[in-house]
Amino acid sequence: MRLCWQTESFFALVCYRARVALRRQGVVVVPAMLHHVSVMSVPLSISEYAVLRPGIYLPHGQVVIDGFTLVGSGTVLRPFVTLGLVDGNPMGPSLGDRVRVGTGAKVLGPITVGSHVQIGANAVVLDDVPDGATAVGVPARVRA
Image 1 (spheres, one colour):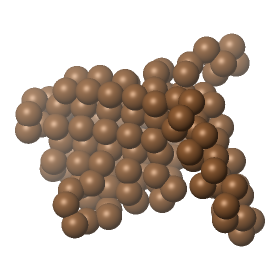
Image 2 (cartoon, rainbow, N blue to C red):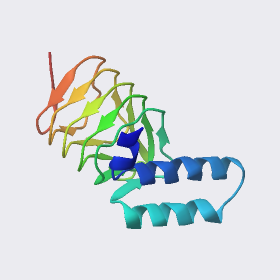
Image 3 (cartoon, rainbow, N blue to C red):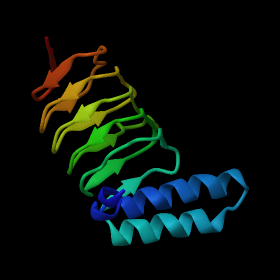
Image 4 (cartoon, rainbow, N blue to C red):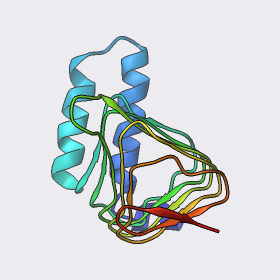
C-alpha cells in the first residue's frame, strides 16, 4: 500500500477512476475539471475514452494514453511512454494483460498487443504483437 503513495502517478490514477465513476452517474463538468487538475499536478494524461483495467502500474508520470485505448490488467507503463493515435483515426492501441512497456516506447494506432508481451525501451510499435512476444526497435519488430 505504501508504494501507491510513493509513485507520482497515483494521484492521476485516482482522478481517472473518479472521472469514470462520475461519468457513469451522468456528471459532466467535474470529470473535466478532475482531468485538468490531474494533468497540472502530475505529467500524466489519460484520455476520457481510455479504459484502464485494474492493476495498472505507472512507476512515474510522463505517460500519455490517448484516444479509444484499452490497457489490460497488470500492465506496467514506464516513463515517457505514449499509447497514441495515428492521423485521422480516434482508435488507439489495445494492450492485453501483463504487458511491460519500456521507457520511451510508443505504441501507435488501432493495433492489438497481446498478453504477456514485452516492448523494449524506445520501441515504436505500429503493428500487432502476438501473445508472449517481445517487440524492439524502430519500427518495432517481434523477437522470439
